[in-house]
Length: 218
Image 1 (cartoon, helix red, strand yellow):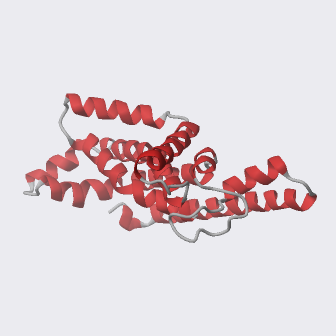
Image 2 (tube, rainbow, N blue to C red; image 1 turned 90 degrees about the horizontal axis):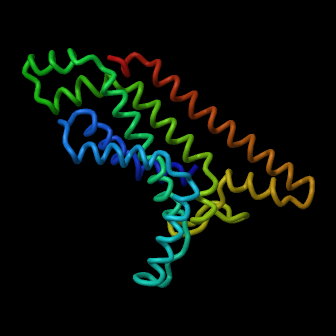
Image 3 (tube, rainbow, N blue to C red; image 1 turned 135 degrees about the vertical axis):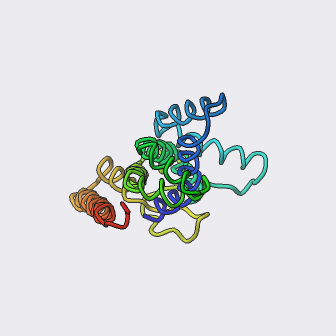
């Protein structure tokens, strides 16, 4: 879950900010191009994002940093690029689904646009935004192609730092289920799959509790 947390920390601010800007800004050519770019990025296969990260390391190694290697930070960056569109689209959709009277009423009461967004629109759209965050976390947690090319290795254990390689549940499941040599290794793959399933269920359970809390809708 370390790589998921790092990826979400890198993607959360730009993803939410992009979604808010797309939902609240006036129509322009740049807005149209950005929205198209987000939609295209959302459809990019994860293996291509993994190749992007691997190519980035090759570029750094050949031109700027000869000691550069695949690591946790590279995986988190590649996963962040993968989930930013999910965050942006979910935020934009949640804000655009609100009734226009909310913004009109807030502005007529003397609120600035920033106050209207922070105190009225975002709290009302919180349920949809949280759903987008959970979707992004699930997308990052289950992806194997990206981390396989950018830093995950078998039997590496917990990462010693952001510049170290690491072991991740999706890659462990893939590795042992595809190349198991004994029943114990196959059982390890099933155990890792069960662990990942339980972690995912816990995340979505917490999200469900947050969405049912009255303060998220006030």
